[in-house]
Image 1 (cartoon, rainbow, N blue to C red):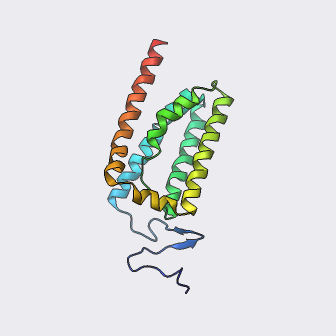
Image 2: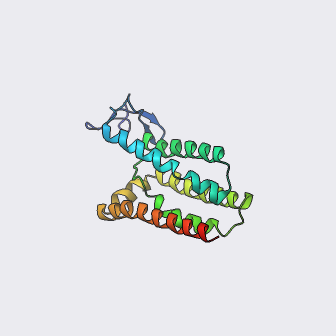
Image 3: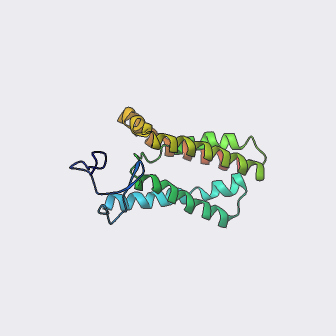
Length: 171
């Protein structure tokens, strides 16, 4: 076995997949209650984005539901591939994303703008994962800032939701 393939003593088993370490839940590591509840919260949070997709992008409910299923799978994929994950880092961008999208007319143009934005974010994240810059970034940010982002993100989204609700009621 080459030195690159040797595992550290405290490292979980994995299937090598290029620069990634693929770990299958229930096979390579035991499922924990904490992970189960985190999965429930992830599902509830993802489902709460359906109204944003229907209102802001004009998608039918069924298509919005399909988008959420794909999004949750993609969200979980990088964790399964051994990339460091800090849940909620993308959530604080929701107000910026909605402000950016409101600059486009509702319909195909807004959907195309959303796809372009998400592809840009995906390329940045893939680049950071392959080059291992994600490790340096996640480990370089102090825990207090990570905690502040995770606490402030839901508050920001709730305030934005309240603002959108008031705007709808006035119109």
